[in-house]
Length: 61
View 1 (cartoon, rainbow, N blue to C red):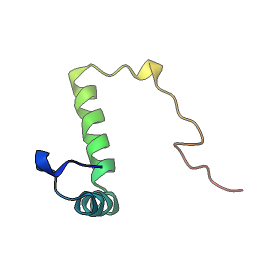
View 2: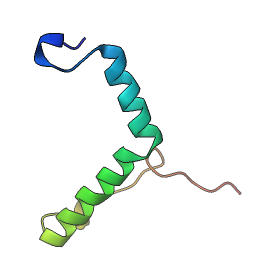
View 3: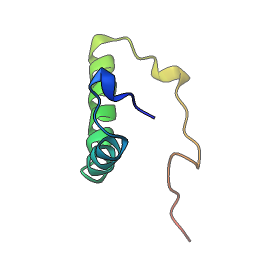
View 4: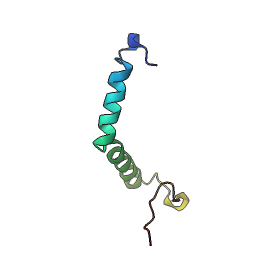
């Protein structure tokens, strides 16, 4: 429910753009760039990072 008065455009237009960005891998690239920048700046503490099976696919067999 986006208010047109704020200049966001229609809900359908926003949905289409989000879908297109997802398909183009924009969010994954943005996530990687942010992590790289935080790592270079020394503001990312990898000692508190973790992975689970929800975020990382496991190989079968």
